[in-house]
Length: 248
Image (cartoon, rainbow, N blue to C red):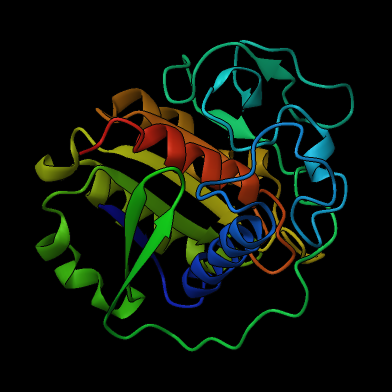
């Protein structure tokens, strides 16, 4: 089970729909279940531009060169990290999935409405992964759904600085919950397609993310995405696939 949590309006429902779109198209075009692998080519998934041409962005069985982490040196002027040979989730500080693996878009975003309850969605990335999305308004009772959670996707709105303090409180509560102590965590900074979005370095500073991660029991990964444009979603699929590869 993968829990998808975050405040109302951060884009949780759209994220799930976009992941489904990528996997459904891939299955239809290739006859394979699971996510596109490295070297699938730009035509592998619609609207992802050059995404398939980069060896570091495919959702393949391995984790190697697709991970960005603190062991690499930043690319000059970009603030990004180069590929690292270390697996996701075991770096000395949070790995960063490339935000350049989803150039272009996936077409017009489908209509969504705020989740006021819970949505269960199954995706197949070489094995079935059930994503349970909980509405932001259900924050006080999120803990009722922590059981049997193998991974956690926590979304924040990178274009809304006024929401950060509440998101930080929610994140601290999640990381301190005993049932989630062994869950792998992917923190997603969504809406980087908007001109007013904050960079990942700004978000990490405002949230004091390095301090949070240093005290957390969980393996934590950080990624910038745009659920609207598709940016970074290949990395999210790969992370889910790697995290749930050995699950029963």
